[in-house]
Amino acid sequence: MAVNGCCFGKDNKPDKNGYLKLCGQRFWEFISGDEKLYIDVIEPIGYKAKQKNDEFMENYAQVVNKLTLEFSQEFCDDGKINWSKLVEYNSGFKKIIKN
Image 1 (cartoon, rainbow, N blue to C red):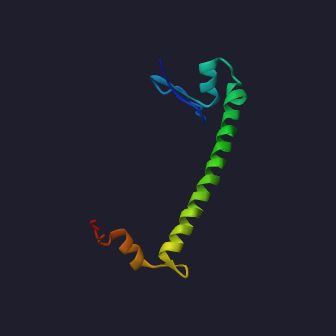
Image 2: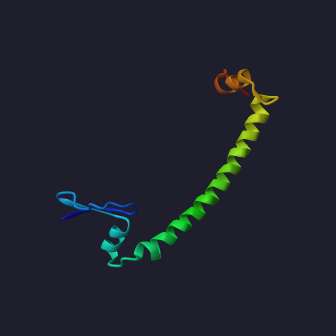
Image 3: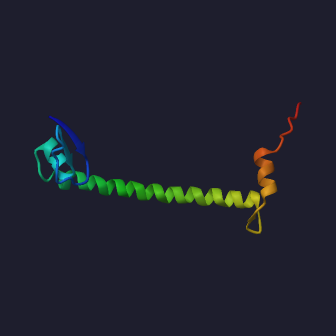
């Protein structure tokens, strides 16, 4: 019988008429034979992932702040976007200088 395994979640009716859908604890027990694997091993992995995600979000916020500052310095006047300057930068004709 085919098995559709889901790393997380719950499904109290795993029999899907022709295959099994095993979610969360049922899935991890099925592949390991250990009914506590999802707690003993898988849950700590989630904490590690959260830690990495928090680190990423901190770095992401730093980059967003840097780019916002650069944009503000280059394309804003007193906090307002200078659309003419921005459009010129983005779409204006660039002169080619030949040596």
